[in-house]
Length: 311
Image (cartoon, rainbow, N blue to C red; front, top):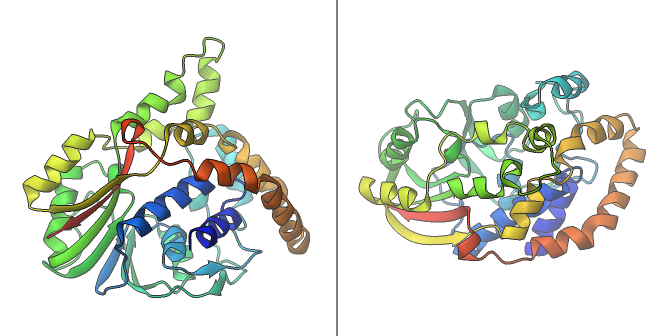
């Protein structure tokens, strides 16, 4: 399963190879807990375009499809002026390619996100029975004690985090399972702004960071997270670090600073030529990315965790 997961993320994220091992490590850490999302009613909070969870649910994507194929060209030029722009939220244009090679092993009852364009993309996967536009700084639009399974890998983006945790607890059923991937403030230790490289200018550090620090609204120590979950009534069932120090440092750079230009170039190719060149690119970099992906995280370097909670 892990090799298949790695190959799926390689195809999906080929122009951001540093994200291949990031997505892969996140999926593996969930698999290794022994818990999954195949019990309904279930919800994927902040599901985005749904592609991570689709692969997590053992779906597979067509070789010609990837994260970058329908990005609006104007948005790429806009990103050159605004380093914080989300190009994946740039258009609500329907995908011209049916992305599904094989469907997911199960469906999820609800997916929520605050970006409509991402929900439009998620709809193409046939993974979610219902998709809801929702800002997590507001109460969740679900009744009490409802979900048997809940998942989110984005709660650290929520500014009103204490309320959000209470809402998660309120809406999960007794005996239900919550799978969260949370990030701690320790990620800042790996930020380009902390790199002890006197020759690296502030302008270069801004390009490498590209607004990341400002988008993470709730960066708390791991002890804060665990105490908050305990105070509200959750029982910790599993916790494991997701990334190694080496993976964190490589992820902070990678191709991210220039990826939008690569997207622009690849998307000017005809589909057949684009798919062929993509495959050649993936085959060439696979050994490097696979080696990085297989570095096991150590607790002392941990800044992101997969946590399983029970009610």
